[in-house]
Length: 336
Image (cartoon, rainbow, N blue to C red; front, side, top):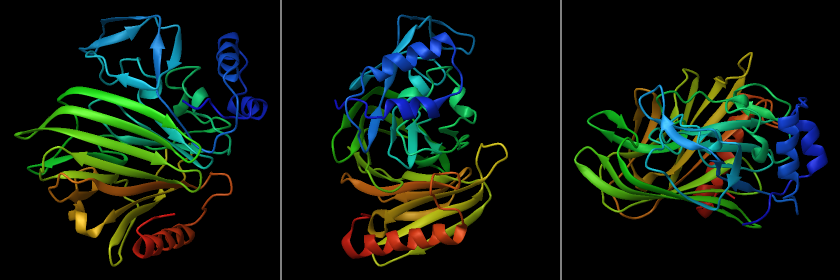
Protein backbone atom coordinates (compact mmCIF):
# COMPACT_ATOMS: atom_id res chain seq x y z
CA UNK A 1 0.00 0.00 0.00
CA UNK A 2 1.29 3.44 -0.90
CA UNK A 3 2.35 5.49 2.13
CA UNK A 4 0.30 8.47 3.26
CA UNK A 5 1.22 11.31 0.97
CA UNK A 6 0.80 14.67 2.63
CA UNK A 7 2.95 17.69 3.22
CA UNK A 8 3.26 17.27 6.98
CA UNK A 9 4.13 20.80 8.08
CA UNK A 10 1.41 22.43 5.98
CA UNK A 11 -1.20 19.85 6.93
CA UNK A 12 -0.45 20.00 10.63
CA UNK A 13 -1.00 23.74 10.58
CA UNK A 14 -4.33 23.31 8.80
CA UNK A 15 -5.79 20.36 10.63
CA UNK A 16 -6.33 21.83 14.06
CA UNK A 17 -5.57 24.67 16.39
CA UNK A 18 -5.74 22.32 19.36
CA UNK A 19 -2.45 21.23 20.89
CA UNK A 20 -3.37 18.77 23.60
CA UNK A 21 -0.93 15.96 24.24
CA UNK A 22 -3.08 13.14 22.83
CA UNK A 23 -3.56 14.93 19.53
CA UNK A 24 0.15 15.74 19.28
CA UNK A 25 0.83 12.04 19.71
CA UNK A 26 -1.56 11.11 16.89
CA UNK A 27 -0.04 13.73 14.59
CA UNK A 28 3.47 12.45 15.29
CA UNK A 29 2.45 8.85 14.56
CA UNK A 30 0.94 9.82 11.20
CA UNK A 31 3.82 12.03 10.13
CA UNK A 32 6.31 9.18 10.52
CA UNK A 33 4.57 7.44 7.60
CA UNK A 34 4.94 10.36 5.17
CA UNK A 35 7.17 9.45 2.25
CA UNK A 36 5.70 11.11 -0.84
CA UNK A 37 2.88 13.34 -2.00
CA UNK A 38 0.00 11.35 -3.54
CA UNK A 39 -2.71 12.70 -5.78
CA UNK A 40 -5.38 10.41 -4.31
CA UNK A 41 -5.72 8.52 -1.07
CA UNK A 42 -8.00 5.87 0.46
CA UNK A 43 -7.92 4.18 3.85
CA UNK A 44 -9.77 2.10 6.40
CA UNK A 45 -8.67 2.35 10.02
CA UNK A 46 -9.63 0.08 12.93
CA UNK A 47 -9.34 0.48 16.69
CA UNK A 48 -6.58 -1.34 18.57
CA UNK A 49 -6.17 -2.47 22.17
CA UNK A 50 -9.82 -2.77 23.17
CA UNK A 51 -12.45 -5.48 23.58
CA UNK A 52 -16.01 -6.14 22.50
CA UNK A 53 -18.50 -5.57 25.31
CA UNK A 54 -22.28 -5.28 25.62
CA UNK A 55 -23.41 -1.73 24.91
CA UNK A 56 -26.45 0.34 25.88
CA UNK A 57 -28.00 0.27 22.39
CA UNK A 58 -28.72 -3.44 22.14
CA UNK A 59 -25.49 -4.44 20.43
CA UNK A 60 -21.84 -4.95 21.32
CA UNK A 61 -19.37 -2.06 21.20
CA UNK A 62 -15.60 -1.91 20.93
CA UNK A 63 -14.37 -0.32 24.15
CA UNK A 64 -10.97 0.59 25.52
CA UNK A 65 -9.19 1.11 22.22
CA UNK A 66 -6.03 3.18 22.58
CA UNK A 67 -5.20 3.87 18.93
CA UNK A 68 -6.23 3.27 15.32
CA UNK A 69 -4.38 1.21 12.73
CA UNK A 70 -4.76 1.43 8.96
CA UNK A 71 -5.24 -1.92 7.21
CA UNK A 72 -5.23 -2.85 3.53
CA UNK A 73 -7.96 -5.45 3.97
CA UNK A 74 -10.71 -5.93 6.51
CA UNK A 75 -13.27 -8.64 7.14
CA UNK A 76 -15.97 -7.09 9.27
CA UNK A 77 -16.28 -8.68 12.71
CA UNK A 78 -19.59 -10.39 13.33
CA UNK A 79 -20.36 -7.87 16.11
CA UNK A 80 -19.89 -4.80 13.96
CA UNK A 81 -22.85 -2.52 13.24
CA UNK A 82 -23.46 1.22 13.39
CA UNK A 83 -21.85 3.11 16.29
CA UNK A 84 -19.66 0.31 17.59
CA UNK A 85 -16.61 2.64 17.71
CA UNK A 86 -14.50 0.03 15.91
CA UNK A 87 -13.77 1.74 12.57
CA UNK A 88 -12.48 5.30 12.54
CA UNK A 89 -15.23 7.47 11.03
CA UNK A 90 -17.29 4.26 10.61
CA UNK A 91 -15.95 3.01 7.30
CA UNK A 92 -13.49 3.50 4.45
CA UNK A 93 -12.67 7.01 3.24
CA UNK A 94 -11.24 8.30 -0.01
CA UNK A 95 -10.18 11.72 -1.25
CA UNK A 96 -8.25 13.87 -3.65
CA UNK A 97 -7.29 17.55 -3.42
CA UNK A 98 -10.87 18.75 -3.88
CA UNK A 99 -13.21 16.50 -1.92
CA UNK A 100 -13.44 13.52 0.41
CA UNK A 101 -16.02 10.77 0.84
CA UNK A 102 -16.70 7.97 3.30
CA UNK A 103 -18.97 4.93 3.28
CA UNK A 104 -20.72 3.69 6.40
CA UNK A 105 -19.52 0.08 6.37
CA UNK A 106 -22.51 -1.30 8.23
CA UNK A 107 -26.21 -1.88 7.56
CA UNK A 108 -26.73 1.77 6.49
CA UNK A 109 -24.24 1.56 3.60
CA UNK A 110 -24.67 5.26 2.80
CA UNK A 111 -21.97 7.49 1.33
CA UNK A 112 -21.17 10.78 3.07
CA UNK A 113 -19.20 13.88 2.01
CA UNK A 114 -16.20 15.52 3.63
CA UNK A 115 -16.14 19.11 2.42
CA UNK A 116 -12.55 20.37 2.15
CA UNK A 117 -11.25 23.92 2.55
CA UNK A 118 -7.67 22.90 1.79
CA UNK A 119 -6.08 21.00 -1.09
CA UNK A 120 -3.93 18.94 1.31
CA UNK A 121 -4.91 15.35 2.07
CA UNK A 122 -6.62 15.16 5.44
CA UNK A 123 -8.20 11.74 6.02
CA UNK A 124 -5.36 10.34 8.18
CA UNK A 125 -6.26 12.95 10.79
CA UNK A 126 -10.06 12.80 10.65
CA UNK A 127 -11.53 11.31 13.81
CA UNK A 128 -8.18 10.96 15.57
CA UNK A 129 -9.01 13.58 18.22
CA UNK A 130 -12.53 12.41 19.00
CA UNK A 131 -14.90 10.02 17.25
CA UNK A 132 -17.39 12.71 16.19
CA UNK A 133 -15.00 15.65 15.82
CA UNK A 134 -15.36 15.72 12.05
CA UNK A 135 -18.97 16.87 12.40
CA UNK A 136 -17.70 20.27 13.53
CA UNK A 137 -16.07 22.99 11.48
CA UNK A 138 -12.27 22.77 11.36
CA UNK A 139 -9.56 24.50 9.31
CA UNK A 140 -9.54 21.54 6.89
CA UNK A 141 -13.35 21.37 6.51
CA UNK A 142 -15.94 18.97 7.95
CA UNK A 143 -18.58 16.32 7.33
CA UNK A 144 -21.17 18.34 5.40
CA UNK A 145 -23.91 15.86 4.45
CA UNK A 146 -26.85 14.66 6.50
CA UNK A 147 -27.69 11.28 4.98
CA UNK A 148 -30.43 10.34 7.46
CA UNK A 149 -32.31 7.27 6.26
CA UNK A 150 -31.12 7.69 2.68
CA UNK A 151 -28.18 6.22 0.75
CA UNK A 152 -26.47 9.63 0.94
CA UNK A 153 -24.76 10.41 -2.36
CA UNK A 154 -24.12 7.46 -4.65
CA UNK A 155 -24.70 4.81 -2.00
CA UNK A 156 -26.47 1.65 -3.06
CA UNK A 157 -29.30 -0.58 -1.90
CA UNK A 158 -32.49 -2.11 -3.24
CA UNK A 159 -36.10 -1.04 -3.64
CA UNK A 160 -38.44 -3.88 -2.63
CA UNK A 161 -42.19 -3.24 -2.76
CA UNK A 162 -41.56 0.53 -2.72
CA UNK A 163 -39.41 0.19 0.41
CA UNK A 164 -35.71 1.03 0.49
CA UNK A 165 -33.72 -1.97 1.76
CA UNK A 166 -30.18 -1.28 2.92
CA UNK A 167 -27.78 -4.01 4.16
CA UNK A 168 -29.55 -5.14 7.31
CA UNK A 169 -28.87 -8.80 6.55
CA UNK A 170 -25.44 -9.72 5.17
CA UNK A 171 -23.59 -12.94 5.91
CA UNK A 172 -20.10 -11.48 5.40
CA UNK A 173 -18.49 -8.20 4.30
CA UNK A 174 -14.88 -7.73 3.19
CA UNK A 175 -13.20 -4.47 2.17
CA UNK A 176 -9.89 -3.89 0.38
CA UNK A 177 -8.00 -0.62 -0.05
CA UNK A 178 -5.68 0.08 -3.01
CA UNK A 179 -3.65 3.24 -3.56
CA UNK A 180 -1.72 3.70 -6.79
CA UNK A 181 -0.10 6.56 -8.68
CA UNK A 182 -3.21 6.98 -10.85
CA UNK A 183 -6.16 6.43 -8.48
CA UNK A 184 -7.37 5.05 -5.18
CA UNK A 185 -10.00 2.33 -4.87
CA UNK A 186 -12.19 0.64 -2.28
CA UNK A 187 -13.32 -2.87 -3.23
CA UNK A 188 -16.09 -4.35 -1.09
CA UNK A 189 -17.48 -7.87 -1.30
CA UNK A 190 -20.85 -8.50 0.29
CA UNK A 191 -21.62 -12.20 0.63
CA UNK A 192 -25.16 -13.37 1.33
CA UNK A 193 -27.03 -10.06 1.12
CA UNK A 194 -30.68 -10.76 1.89
CA UNK A 195 -33.35 -8.43 0.51
CA UNK A 196 -36.93 -9.38 -0.23
CA UNK A 197 -36.89 -13.05 -1.19
CA UNK A 198 -33.40 -12.93 -2.69
CA UNK A 199 -29.97 -13.79 -1.34
CA UNK A 200 -27.10 -12.57 -3.53
CA UNK A 201 -23.45 -11.58 -3.47
CA UNK A 202 -22.57 -8.04 -4.52
CA UNK A 203 -19.20 -6.62 -5.55
CA UNK A 204 -18.69 -2.88 -5.21
CA UNK A 205 -15.75 -0.86 -6.52
CA UNK A 206 -15.35 2.84 -5.76
CA UNK A 207 -12.54 4.75 -7.50
CA UNK A 208 -11.36 8.33 -7.12
CA UNK A 209 -8.96 10.06 -9.50
CA UNK A 210 -6.47 12.94 -9.10
CA UNK A 211 -8.57 15.51 -10.92
CA UNK A 212 -12.12 16.70 -10.25
CA UNK A 213 -14.70 15.75 -7.64
CA UNK A 214 -16.21 12.54 -8.95
CA UNK A 215 -16.07 8.94 -7.82
CA UNK A 216 -16.62 6.09 -10.26
CA UNK A 217 -18.88 3.36 -8.83
CA UNK A 218 -19.15 -0.16 -10.24
CA UNK A 219 -21.63 -2.72 -8.90
CA UNK A 220 -21.60 -6.40 -9.91
CA UNK A 221 -24.47 -8.56 -8.56
CA UNK A 222 -24.26 -12.37 -8.59
CA UNK A 223 -27.94 -12.61 -9.54
CA UNK A 224 -30.17 -10.48 -11.75
CA UNK A 225 -32.59 -8.85 -9.31
CA UNK A 226 -35.05 -6.02 -9.70
CA UNK A 227 -34.64 -2.87 -7.66
CA UNK A 228 -30.86 -2.55 -7.28
CA UNK A 229 -30.40 1.19 -7.02
CA UNK A 230 -28.42 4.28 -6.12
CA UNK A 231 -29.47 7.86 -5.47
CA UNK A 232 -29.02 11.32 -3.97
CA UNK A 233 -30.54 12.31 -0.63
CA UNK A 234 -33.45 14.73 -1.04
CA UNK A 235 -33.10 17.94 0.99
CA UNK A 236 -35.88 19.83 -0.80
CA UNK A 237 -33.55 22.00 -2.86
CA UNK A 238 -33.45 22.58 -6.62
CA UNK A 239 -33.48 19.39 -8.70
CA UNK A 240 -31.91 19.02 -12.15
CA UNK A 241 -32.18 16.21 -14.68
CA UNK A 242 -30.75 15.94 -18.17
CA UNK A 243 -30.49 13.09 -20.67
CA UNK A 244 -28.03 12.69 -23.50
CA UNK A 245 -27.82 9.97 -26.13
CA UNK A 246 -26.30 7.31 -23.85
CA UNK A 247 -25.79 8.96 -20.46
CA UNK A 248 -27.89 11.14 -18.15
CA UNK A 249 -27.58 12.91 -14.83
CA UNK A 250 -29.67 13.94 -11.88
CA UNK A 251 -28.48 16.64 -9.51
CA UNK A 252 -29.48 18.84 -6.62
CA UNK A 253 -28.22 22.28 -5.65
CA UNK A 254 -28.94 24.61 -2.77
CA UNK A 255 -28.46 25.27 0.92
CA UNK A 256 -28.20 21.70 2.20
CA UNK A 257 -25.08 21.24 4.34
CA UNK A 258 -24.35 20.62 8.02
CA UNK A 259 -22.15 23.71 8.15
CA UNK A 260 -23.18 26.47 10.56
CA UNK A 261 -24.79 28.36 9.02
CA UNK A 262 -25.82 25.87 6.35
CA UNK A 263 -24.48 26.74 2.93
CA UNK A 264 -24.61 25.67 -0.71
CA UNK A 265 -23.78 22.21 -1.98
CA UNK A 266 -24.25 20.60 -5.36
CA UNK A 267 -24.60 16.82 -5.72
CA UNK A 268 -24.87 14.88 -8.97
CA UNK A 269 -25.11 11.34 -10.24
CA UNK A 270 -24.35 10.24 -13.83
CA UNK A 271 -25.78 6.97 -15.17
CA UNK A 272 -26.05 4.99 -18.42
CA UNK A 273 -29.54 5.12 -19.88
CA UNK A 274 -29.45 1.52 -21.12
CA UNK A 275 -28.60 0.22 -17.63
CA UNK A 276 -31.43 2.01 -15.85
CA UNK A 277 -35.04 0.86 -15.52
CA UNK A 278 -36.40 3.96 -13.81
CA UNK A 279 -35.51 7.27 -12.23
CA UNK A 280 -37.98 8.41 -9.62
CA UNK A 281 -38.45 10.08 -6.26
CA UNK A 282 -38.23 7.79 -3.24
CA UNK A 283 -39.13 8.44 0.38
CA UNK A 284 -35.72 9.91 1.23
CA UNK A 285 -33.81 10.32 -2.02
CA UNK A 286 -33.92 10.79 -5.76
CA UNK A 287 -33.55 7.20 -6.97
CA UNK A 288 -31.86 5.64 -10.00
CA UNK A 289 -33.05 2.02 -10.28
CA UNK A 290 -31.04 -0.38 -12.42
CA UNK A 291 -32.34 -3.09 -14.73
CA UNK A 292 -31.87 -6.69 -13.54
CA UNK A 293 -28.44 -7.92 -14.63
CA UNK A 294 -25.37 -9.87 -13.58
CA UNK A 295 -23.15 -7.54 -15.60
CA UNK A 296 -21.33 -4.65 -13.95
CA UNK A 297 -23.33 -1.42 -13.80
CA UNK A 298 -21.35 1.82 -13.76
CA UNK A 299 -22.19 5.29 -12.53
CA UNK A 300 -20.41 8.40 -11.25
CA UNK A 301 -21.26 10.71 -8.38
CA UNK A 302 -19.80 14.01 -7.24
CA UNK A 303 -20.19 16.79 -4.70
CA UNK A 304 -19.26 20.48 -5.10
CA UNK A 305 -19.19 22.58 -1.92
CA UNK A 306 -19.08 26.36 -2.09
CA UNK A 307 -16.31 26.52 0.55
CA UNK A 308 -14.02 24.27 -1.48
CA UNK A 309 -10.74 25.97 -2.32
CA UNK A 310 -11.22 27.58 -5.76
CA UNK A 311 -14.46 25.65 -6.04
CA UNK A 312 -17.83 26.10 -7.74
CA UNK A 313 -19.74 28.96 -6.10
CA UNK A 314 -23.02 29.20 -8.03
CA UNK A 315 -25.78 26.96 -9.32
CA UNK A 316 -25.21 28.24 -12.85
CA UNK A 317 -21.55 27.20 -12.80
CA UNK A 318 -22.46 23.87 -11.23
CA UNK A 319 -24.90 23.03 -14.03
CA UNK A 320 -22.37 24.14 -16.66
CA UNK A 321 -19.84 21.74 -15.15
CA UNK A 322 -22.37 18.89 -15.21
CA UNK A 323 -23.31 19.59 -18.82
CA UNK A 324 -19.65 19.50 -19.81
CA UNK A 325 -19.19 16.15 -18.12
CA UNK A 326 -22.36 14.77 -19.70
CA UNK A 327 -21.10 15.79 -23.13
CA UNK A 328 -17.82 13.99 -22.49
CA UNK A 329 -19.63 10.84 -21.36
CA UNK A 330 -21.87 10.82 -24.41
CA UNK A 331 -18.88 11.32 -26.70
CA UNK A 332 -16.23 9.09 -25.13
CA UNK A 333 -18.11 7.00 -22.52
CA UNK A 334 -15.72 8.47 -19.96
CA UNK A 335 -16.06 11.44 -17.65
CA UNK A 336 -12.36 12.33 -17.92
